[in-house]
Structure formats: C-alpha cells, structure tokens
Length: 287
Image (cartoon, rainbow, N blue to C red; front, top):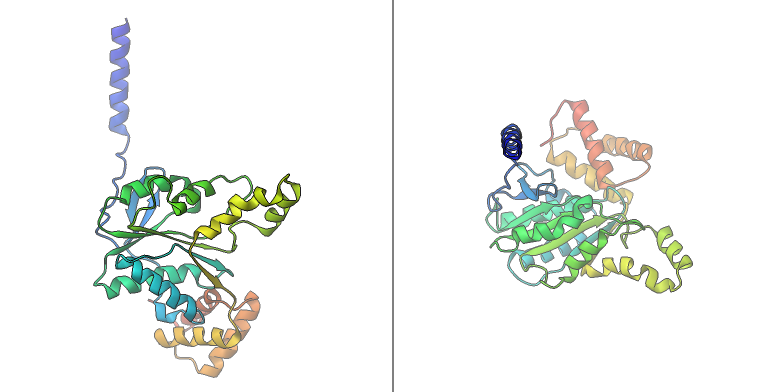
C-alpha cells in the first residue's frame, strides 16, 4: 500500500512540474545597459529601453550633475568612488540625474551597453541585496545599484541589510558595485519619527543613532530643491528647443507660469509635464 501511495504521489508531482511554467532565467549581465532586480526569483531582468532624458536637458542642477558625473566616471574607470544619496524635493531631478549620468559615462567609454550597468532594486526588496551582490560580485563588469525613493519607518528593519552593504559587512562591499539612492528625506526617516523616538527612549541619542546614521554611510550627499522662475524657464525652453516645439518664447513663458501655478511648484517634473501638454496640443511626438 505504501509503495502504491508513493507511486501515486510521484505521478502527481511530475504532472504538476509539467504544468508549472519554467522559472524565468536571469538575463545575461554583460549584454544590456540596465536591469531590474526581482527578489522573488533572485534574477535580473534586462531593460530594453531605459526611461531617461539627456544630461544636458537637466537644468538648474549643474553642481549636482558635475559632482555625480565625476564620481561615476571614477568608478567606471576602477578608481575610488563614493556611494551617493540624492535627497530633497519631489520632482527635482534626483532619479533623472542618476539615469542620465549613467548613460553619459557609458557613451564616453564606448557604449552602449558600455562597461557600467545600472541595476534598479525596489525599496521593498532591500533585504535581498546580499543575494543580488552575490550574483554580480564575481563579474568583470561594474554595477551601480540604484534604489529610487528610499525611506524607512519605525518598524522597518530592512535598513539593516542596506547598512551592512554600505559598511561592507564581513565580506566587504564588492569593488565592482556602487550604491546610489534617492529620497525625499535627508536622514531616510521622517523627522517626527526621529523626535518621537528621542522623546520616549531611555537613552534618546542611542535610540535613533542606528537609523539616522544610515545616511552617513553615503559618502556623497547631493541636495535638490525647487527651481526658481528663471531656472524653470530655462528647463521649458531647453525642452522646447530640443523637440522643435514652435511656440513664441513670450507665449511659452506665459503658459509655463500658469501651468506651474496650477501645480503649486516649479520643478523638472512639472516642466516635463508642461512640455508634454504643449507637444500634445501641437500634435507632435516627443522622443
């Protein structure tokens, strides 16, 4: 009876294996410019076309562009470079500058695909960072691991995985890996949470030191803020010129002011949304 049961279970298992789709294979990590990390299957998926704008279209953030560009160039050439935290206002160009700088450096060095790969990891997948690093550690290629909109709350222990990576842990951070992150928060956690933990802890300084000090593990901090009106106009006019939008400058500026007022801010994101509106009205495609 036991043998019959085992045989039946074996047949059921084999049938289920045939019905189940095969697990997607990880992409060739030498063939594409950019990848997305999927923690569930511990695999890298190649990105056929990266959603980005050219570096010279990003206005009003010249110092940030130059600093991140030089840091990325050094890393691509095998020289010492820093992990980078880009923090500040929403829509100010933080993620755009990471993608634009990556593309710019790769073009300088003969790409695409180039010697430098960009790997996006989602914030909720941070605990799987060790698995990602083991996947790319032993390759000749260099990788920027990029997390957009990174932040943590009081009950979130995922920051420990990131801290171990930034500190190096027992193995040390792989020499071919650099970590870039964007956040709306300079210390990666909300100010009211920092104050709350300080006020309720027996030792207030130690209560938040571990979480707040995470941002100190980034050797490079770049701040981003809302643009002034002249910079906003420069963004608009740069986009209009690049995409051949035939609107008189005075009219373009007037419409841009009205658009920014309805959005309540002036930023790179708002400028791009305005340009999409103008292009749509003119019946022109962007890209």
